[in-house]
Length: 489
Image (cartoon, rainbow, N blue to C red; front, side, top):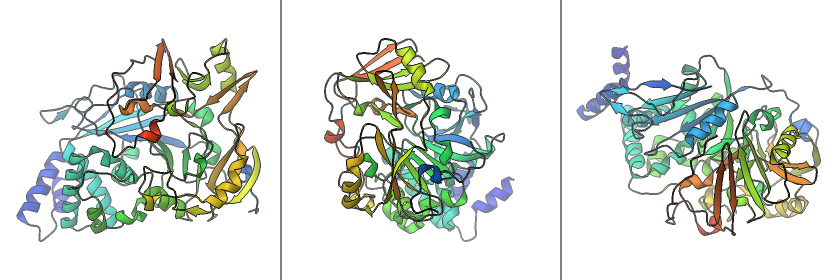
């Protein structure tokens, strides 16, 4: 096996330096150790028409996937894992010796101890840092058909870029299935995954089985918005939580990103001497998908929940543990029995097929200045004409869903009943598929407060917060938040 692998790594006409490099890379690869722990049509279609093609199976196996590169894990990883376990989902976390608390490395042996229990549905895969980089290089070059010299250049450039700016990992998110997708079958032989979810690990999953849009798994890509009045026009696939069909065609979509077409354009784009990133996962990659008429998708309004959308003093988000994690936004006053409200709200499932009106095709433009975190030439959004025609229909009870149906090349919109709004008597609450805990980004959210009582966490605001207007991800220094609460769920 060693001879076969070394022969692959040593094509003819390699320089002495390249031979030494690849021999080192192979030697490092022999030390990595995998450790698993855990608990385990018609011209005017309706939403029902959109779901008429049954998924196979109806509720396919889904794996949540994240790659962590930080020096230490996020402060809420253990709580995220608990919500994964309570929902009986599968999760794979890939990390390297760059994160010693996850993947300590001593005497050529990994001994991760961060995951305290054992469960075949949750796995941690550890790599040495050089081999971690080589997975990206080899995965991409397998698609490009690299020469040994190109493979070496891709590897060294990725190493330099990641060492300079770890946030470049976000730009590599589209490549995940090519670099690490083989782990889905090798580490979970008892599963037959049909979708993988690109997920952040600073979020809490709600009642996944009840809220996830299973009826739409005949689509290739599913993503979720916060559900502000106008954010339906922003056409991108959230880096924090997006589901992708596992197929050769969808796995290789990243090859359509202009700067990822071949090794030369990629090496030019990721110039390791420049310390910045490009939001490629939500920018150029999303734009390529939106413009690709062969890829179906659905963007669901309102099922992503964050603390940035809270009205000061009048609203709060409550995350409740117990047997099932429940997440609701509710008024700070006028709710006498929260547990009863949660129980009744949980019993009301989203009505995916309640279409109020088919709104027709929408026009796509790159004139999207409001998508400020993405380079201007890499944005995609609904143009002003379509927006002005449709947006007046949006209300607290009605939202706009944008999609491309399987087999249809156009992007369309429908007005649907709010997926997040739930009425329990006189009380109106909002549900979420997940709560993205923005606070974990170590940026101050002015006026935010957090309370914890047993298995309940409450997040609210004491004053208005223009966080997203005042700060960007890339350029503005942001002070580090002073400490975190310890959430026991």
